[in-house]
Length: 382
Image (tube, one colour):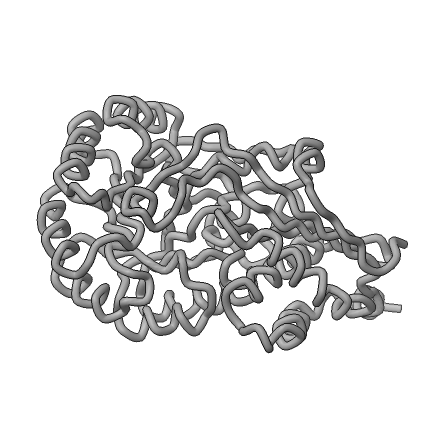
């Protein structure tokens, strides 16, 4: 029997789903909190999928939700998981479609596909591990490291004095750029915060800002004009995520690039952003759009449109996907998820090194098991 025939004869035998809640050291506030739309974030609900085949090949995948949705995501994943039992793990696109249609009555975006994301990532991790390749190498890597920028030190709950300290510490650590949250009801505070960090770091350090969808169109016009002289890498989510026309108008008016897309949960929605020319940087989030399968389709559209790529959150996954993109991307550095895994990403000279371990190069920590509130097993372990 040939190697390919042997591989195709394998099948998925067992799945373990885990609903894990990662506590955050400090409540997190962005503009959505200060405008009264959300409460401070205190934890992240992680959905882990561990898949094993009858021949003993294994894969680990994850998705997540913030503030709400964790129990629903876990419940949906548990309900559709039996679709995978007995299937060939190499047929990842086929399995994504089957999982999607298994829950199509509740939609093909949002929570329904976010639950699929954990399975999809696990199947890619399994395939890469079986091949003895890192995920980026399996997909066809363009580079061995990616530019990275820090977000976690720039939230609005951080006093301006500490904001400057955090930014300097990130640069000293070797992180390439700094992103600051803006979008407060008092725009003058936003301006002071950004100008203080720019003065401290100088003009050579890449600087981004993120309004988290909290400006209306007139405010966004005024604020983009104010920030234009600061040489920002981008202004992120100045408007509601679904205001494609408004984002397009800003992108056409200002030299500072517009970045958006992190809150969208399907390839169709990202396609609308691209069709409207509503972003200079597209910011898909692989778990939110349903995993690697739809992410690659979105990235292909973005590449054809000549857009920059800045995947949102989950650097442990996006470091691999960013390495595959044709032009140099920016990957967001968030250390929040680090306690969940035994491995750490390496930062050097403003760049995040792509792991060379097989698959994602990740294994769940004992702490992740401790934070697990609910789990389910489907099928029988070989």
